[in-house]
Image (cartoon, rainbow, N blue to C red; front, side, top):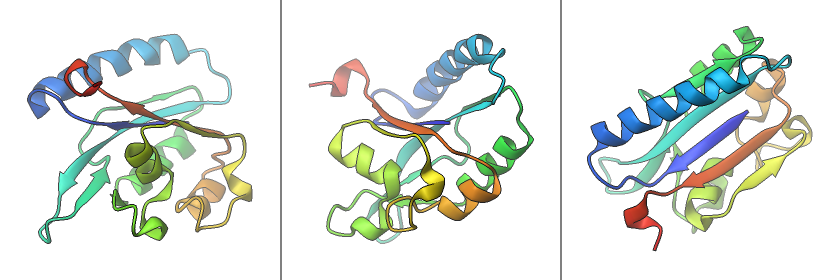
Length: 144
């Protein structure tokens, strides 16, 4: 499974369209994946209290291979909002850590993690998600 924490240059609709196209192309390449693959995009959004969280709801995603449990994991993931506040690491999860550090994070078996390290561990166990790769994605304007 892969998650992408995206910083958004340009308009949100333009970025969503570009990400949708990229995920479509990636999905074609992953079509023969026997164990299945889920790729999700997480983008920052401001909350009513002024804090920033990362959400996947309403954003492009791709499921390839054996997908029923991955589709369920996608639905469950959309209910999560990960903090970007480094002073509250218990609410960040892997998605928030990657977004805040701008460094990718990979695990070969998140099922062995406890909830403090991987907030969706129960869902990962139920949906048989093992390996994850979380990568930050930056447009040319925010690449610095």
